[in-house]
Image 1 (tube, helix red, strand yellow):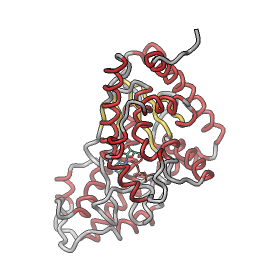
Image 2: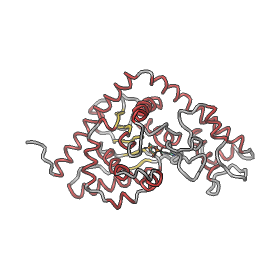
Image 3: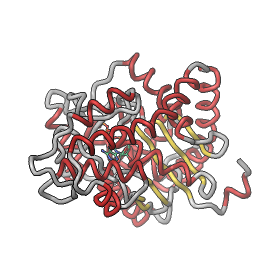
Length: 337
Ligand code: AQP
């Protein structure tokens, strides 16, 4: 990356947790949208393993999922030459800034976060401090790189809002330090819903494997899951609030086809659910097949992946250290003479 040409570019930061196999929701809601940004922005794309351990993870699996996600990023089209692609825990400033930001964040506002409430209900036996602190760590991730934009799915809007609040609060208290970031939410596929409970978000950690379509699913599995998708008994292929299942399938179809909702409704007018589900399944399976093949190819070359992640962490570290030094100066931490 050319140092001078980078200086005038706006900054983009985003991340995904290596907390399981990625779903088509993670793909269309986030990663896919990062690809076109690489040429026009200074980009940092992390693998958020520190966020992942806020719920229990098997250590060996977490390591494996981390490398798989690195390979997936590249397979989706991220170019490690153009963006810093790295693992969050390899850049210690994330945890350090998080600690400082904790002191300008209130317990009440963390307890009100939707994800905290959802995950506390889902993991009632493990409501740990990290789970509550998740949004502050995410604020640290974003603010460390002075990011202008954060491309995420709609479920993360609230967390970007709190990162903005924290940035403004810190700036007001200690003087101009952070840039106030903006969430970028895609128009199509910002919130893909579960195939089994279409009023609930599709999640990589859903216990019902038929609820989520994983990027690692083969064609037969993808088609089978779509065939089993919950719809309704009225047989009209139109999007409406009363038809969450059909609306979700249409949204998935549009996101993968790149067509409008009106065009999709027109295409399936007068056709049955069986036909429709098969078409959605085939469209998705065909779109993810090349990504799967490329990820598989990349995963064979661990030396290459390790090199990419090391280089990405070094690049991220340089910016992160500069911001953290400034933060430490502002809050009055002694840093040597
Ligand atoms: N269903 C979704 N539709 C669109 N975008 C989605 N994202 C997640 N689910 C959907 C977006 O994917 C990015 C990475 O998410 P994450 O791994 O940081 O955590 P998450 O939002 O909690 O995603 P999951 O799949 O639900 O993970 P688990 O089950 O581990 O909690 C984010 O930009 C997110 O908005």
